[in-house]
Length: 422
Image 1 (cartoon, rainbow, N blue to C red):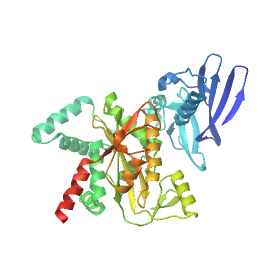
Image 2: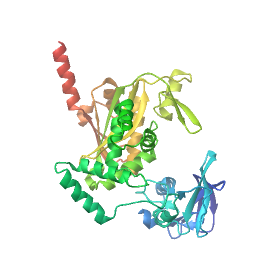
Image 3: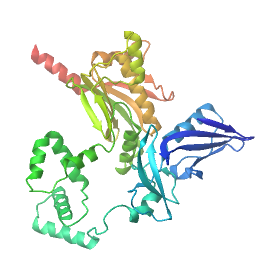
Image 4: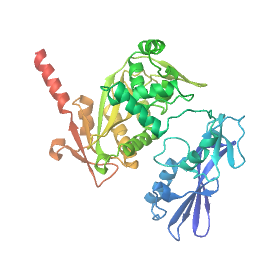
């Protein structure tokens, strides 16, 4: 970050990951210490903080300034809608070459509205603000002869399906209606329920799904299109802001009540095949299958073993958030060779801190009775955990407590197996 100071204010320039026309976009933060107000500018235009539910006032404390920098770092810059460079863009629309910092050679032509809000809202999942999406729909590189059903036709089709297929479920009616749309439209838009079912079928058996698709009994999405849906958010080991944003947007879409944002973390390890896989994406290729429990845990491993080495993962640690109202969302996974208590300590509290910044509060940690899990629990107490009712102070919020729970069903299953084996 770069700093520039005036008589009553300080201007901070924060680098973003967006490269526009060969230049790295900067986030300009102005801190007015006299009036205790701050503002954000991107591309020289002021961002309306109220649209992001962010207050303009601040306290002259280190923690408050740190929070402002964290918020600005997480604000996503609007890069517009992708277009072909050969397409003629009207003069009232901004055309830019957009890339990513560190990969400047890979750039796409995109267009933005002149009234662009400069930033993407918290509830948006794409790279465009609502203003660009609403104003640029007419200039997308799509065929204009798209046949869509209007409201009257759609209602007629629903009545027709109920008469011809009186016992059909809602899911079957949605599938039949999507088949009608695919066969009678030049633009293929798949229903969300169809994509979800096809992803589930293909994940079980690729060969069976391709055989069903090639039979021409139904019109189904291709494997390439399903992979595009599956890879909409890149699933890398560790916590990802894209996944947390996806989690937040999902909670808003399903109308999770305020109490549903409170809950706990469930974690468990599962065995995987010890192998290396070459993952190729575009011009990039990487080997997948190494142990990855975060940079801090890796540094501790190097100090302990006094050497730099890489091992193949034999297990995967899966972590899920479970709210009090039943809202469940998997948030992270880590390839391990049997996670250690110290590694688990770093991973869990890093996740709790990240979740808190997105509005999710963790009140309990549920785990099975494995040796490493018991050691992980003991790390939070100076004496016997039972004397403290398995309740410790939260490291990210001293005003809250976090409970350490044992998975009752898992313990009963182990007890049952021990009785049967004896």
